[in-house]
Length: 538
Image (tube, rainbow, N blue to C red; front, side, top):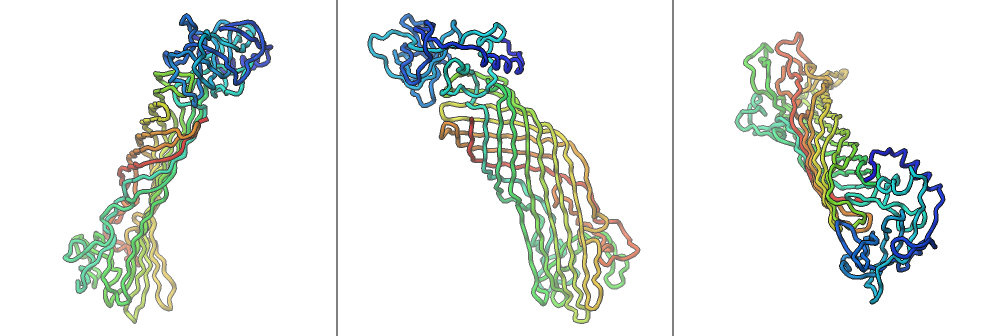
């Protein structure tokens, strides 16, 4: 076993000096013959009994001794000849006089009677200076790719033992079909039967009041997206590598709207809890606090419409180092089964944003005072995570099939942002337009931009199954589960407690508590779903 602690600089220098050194090509009989011409592609190069032992194909002479090792192309059906005497066609290289040659096999056929085991032709490299001789470089090769079958002769590449799927670089593109948990919202729009008294119209808890929208989970439909993964091994043995990932889910949106006719039917309202009730005629305080509503439409009094629009989006990026921890099969041909366990350590970014807007347009039906109101509430949230990610990956392969199991967890800082805005525009004939800060649930008492930093944990589980359809391309199908806690969602930031003194035009001086008020309200988030895509390895 050679010293694995030699630096990449020494290896690169050794390969450079080796390439500049003089080489000789020799024609040999058996495992080491006299010098001659270089190997000729496509000729029969060896005859012997085919053996398979400890993940390696070998040729045995008439006495049962190994005199050559075979590296078959993936298209060569070599297994059916194990135990038989065969003639091998391909290319042969001997990197050191005292070692068995390696043969890159292009064809295997049964040997003719009477042929004895031997290498018919081979090439080798002479030793360079002692510190940089070829034997020292056999296990640690600067070039991480597999030895190309078209390059042979005095500078033929050295054999490389790898564990896992072939190739130095890989890239994967997936189509995602995922589900996420939705966003909870309180009751936002109500209605009451015709004939309901005005003071009871749309009020929660009153007989006949029906919730038209809200008190539910929204944004629960499946979402589509894409994910891109890529990586590269930094050494010839596929032990140390770098990888990156990005995924994006399409923005999901949901809308609700309803309007009355010109006469104000049906009854429509927006419910809230009145924290500071007043007598509607004297405007004197009229406790206790109770359920109430703001009318959107009422027959012969008010006509109007109300709409609720919401949306959410999710995206993530990651970069990590990958280190092999264990492998049960080291191979020099791409058809051998394998199983390996890797450590993954790196950086994870995750971002989720929500928007929830409520808009009203109201028109008074009093011909003497045709006032119009445009009222708008807006709640936005953003969760931005930056942290370290640590995980394990298990890969296994057999013939054309591959399996990968991923288990990761990211820990780090979550930056939570909540933005609340509201406005009311009052339009009267022959009068200037009046604009006020605050709608119904967004008032000066809670309007603003709020942010804070929190510690968060994001575990992730992934399972992928692959099937090789072409030498370098595989179809991939799998499943991913992602869990995120805590997060802030827009619907949770709504406070239904309202002091009507703040409603436009506000009553001054303001009496009673400042409600609605802001407080960070957190919940958990999860996303899971299926992926299908294409992976390439080179």
